[in-house]
Length: 260
Image 1 (tube, rainbow, N blue to C red):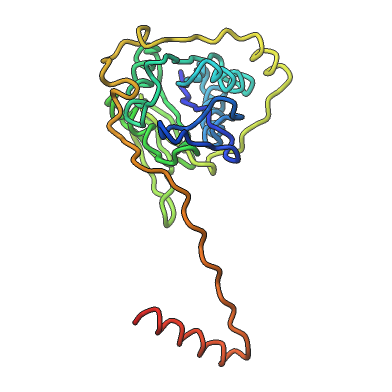
Image 2: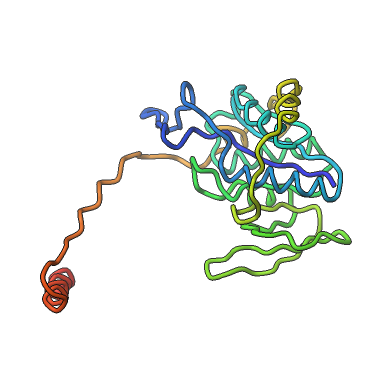
């Protein structure tokens, strides 16, 4: 079974900065990490390989330094790393990102399952995984919390919902987005770290993956950021003192004032 795990290098959430002119994330000089939800995607891909055989390819789009997250994925059990990097991809929104990753996946060709974390912490849109599936025209199961069975070209999984879970089944090849309940990610082994250090990362530019120029980067991104601002702090709550009856009366009076 051949698996592609799509991962992303994101700024450490404590150091996120926005360029006031371009309205894009500032990545230069900012500590970057593997998107936390993608750690679960890596682990699930490696577990499937250990159970069914095959290989796991980690795929990411980003600047040249994003090879660091691919090496981390290899240290955790992935077999190869592919980085699509080009100035032509700069400013990509979720639509352009999904398209670019899809073209890279088409170049890889041989896959049974694509696994993504449910969302990236720097955007929180949860759109790229489904966007890849839509572009490739393959079925998808989102918010997977458990894979129940893979048999006879079909996969059965539990997907998390707001009030529980539901069972979904679809044919392979397919795309899954996973939530943190799906597994507990492992730590890299010494052997894994050594393999990652010496690994040759495949790097593809826009010309290597093909695709329509007007669907890449800013040209292929219909999303526009008009304004960025810090939300005002929430007003502090009020504590009503006195016995319970008196406090409840004060609270009811306050609610009446708000609803007038």
